[in-house]
Amino acid sequence: MSDLMQVMAAPFVACLLLVAMFAYLGIHIIAREVIFVDLSLAQMASLGSTSALLFGVAPHSVLGYAFALSATMLGAFIFAMTRTTRERQRVPQEAIIGIVFVVASAATILIAERTPAGADLIKEALLAVFLLVGLFHWWLRRRFFTISLDEDAAARLGWRARWWDFLFYASFGVAITVAVPIAGVLLVFTFLVVPAVIAFLFTRRPAALLAISWTAAAVACAAGLLLSFELDLPTGPLVICVFAVVLAVAGRVARRVPTPGAP
Image 1 (cartoon, rainbow, N blue to C red):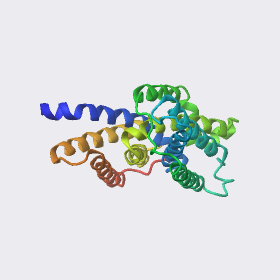
Image 2: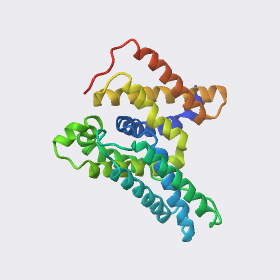
Image 3: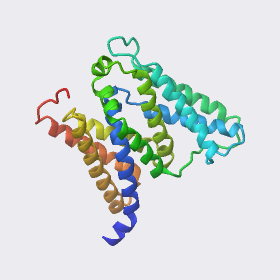
Image 4: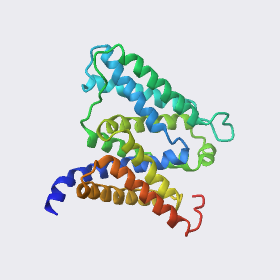
C-alpha cells in the first residue's frame, strides 16, 4: 500500500486538478452542443506553437506560449462570432468547429515542413493557470450558466451572447493550451466530455451537474490509477477505458430514474 501511495499520489492529484477544471467546462460544452471544441482549440494552439518556430522562437519559452495562446484566441473569436440561436441556425456550430480543426491541422503540417523541429508547448504553471481560470469562471458563473443552460433567458435579459461566448472560449482555450501538452488530447477530451455526459443523464441543475460530474471523474481517476498500478498497464489509456465503464454504469442507473427536466 505504501508503494501504491508513493507512486500514484502525484498522478491522482494531477487528475483531480484536471477534472476539477474540465468536468466543469464540460457541462457548458455539452449544454452548448459543441462537443469537439477542445480538439479544435488544441489544434489551434499547436498551430501557434509551430508558427513560433518560423521566427526562431522556442515553443517552450514564454514567447512561444504567447504564439500558441494567440492562435487559440483566434479560434475563440471565430467560435464566438459564428454563434447563432438554435432557431436561426442554418449550419450547426459543430461544422464550423470541424472546419477550424481541419484547416488548423493542415496549416500546422505545412508550417512544420518549413521548420527544423516539431512543435511543443509550455508545460509549467498548470496550477496557477487553472486557479486564475477557475476564479474567472466563479466570478462570472451565473452569466455563463444562464447562457449555456437557458439561452432564451439570456436573450430576454439583453446580454450580448457573442461577447460572453468569446470570454468563455478564450478562458477555455487558456486551460486547453496548458493542459493538453501535459495530459494529452485524448485524456483531456475524456475529462471534458464524459463526466458532463454522466451528469446530464440525471439532472440539469448547475449545482447537481457539478457534484455528479466531479464525483464520477474522481472515482474513475482513482480506479484507473489503481488498476494501472496493479496491472502494470499504461495509465492514460486505462483511465480513459475506466471512464467508459463508469459512463456505461451511469447509463444503466439513469434508466431507473425520471428523465431530467429543465432547470
